Amino acid sequence: MTTEKDVERTLILHASQCGSTVFKNNVGMYTDQRGNVIRYGLCKGSSDLIGWTPITITEDMVGKKIAVFTAIEVKLNKNGKYKATDLQKAFISAVNNAGGFAGVADCKQDLEEIINGKS
Image (cartoon, rainbow, N blue to C red):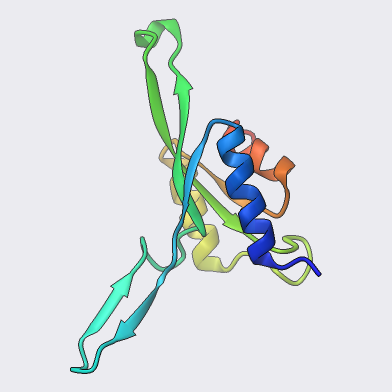
């Protein structure tokens, strides 16, 4: 049986094969023995995988490569019962509106569409 973790591993590997670099982004909080709350991860609603996708700037932009922020929300079945939450959708929209690449993926084709700016 395929799990979301299996899909995530597949997408991390495929992202690297497509030229993107992504890292697992765990989000949560931990309370230590003294009661101190330690929050970790990018922010609530941030995507499972974050990183960058290098692109070559067009001639009118000096011909340099830049890294575009990339965020992939991994779901086992994005059209089934495993849908992105409202916070996750808001994060994806914020990244896309700022010029990054972001979206929800449950397969290699989804990931390719996201990192090619087609999501």
